[in-house]
Picture 1 (cartoon, helix red, strand yellow):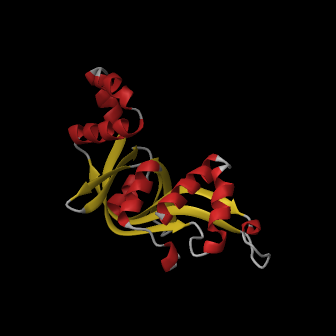
Picture 2 (picture 1 turned 45 degrees about the vertical axis):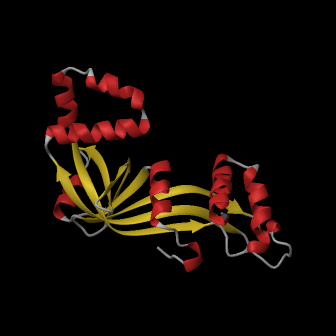
Length: 202
């Protein structure tokens, strides 16, 4: 992605964004060479100082076949985003913009077919999103659990390249405090951006 140096985030910020906003876009090439996109939650792990993303798709979703044939893919995460009015500047010689947080990962995929490994992956996603459901999942009959596991294809996505964009107009200090004041009283996304502005200026 286009990443001016003033908006370049660090790996630790990327990890935090992925954990806070785990619903991703997985982008591969289909058999015609066109982008094939699946929207899905992913679990982040740190292994040997490298990021690994874990997820799964329904067996009926052809995306896993594209990953099998062409393991190189891209994963994107979008954090909070919001409009920024030029009214925050002390003068009128400015235009509107849009502030946002995003992470792009180049990945290499490997499929997981082993049922116990798929079960372990699902437990990690459950722990991320609804820990209380773990007991219910573990209490399922073996036949039902096997049926559910056979209906998905799981995968690991080893991150081979990472870009993190923290676009908060931090290169415009004359408007930073005014923009923070607007965002702090705004929508959920705007308030989330205000919290990230606090991190940037620390």
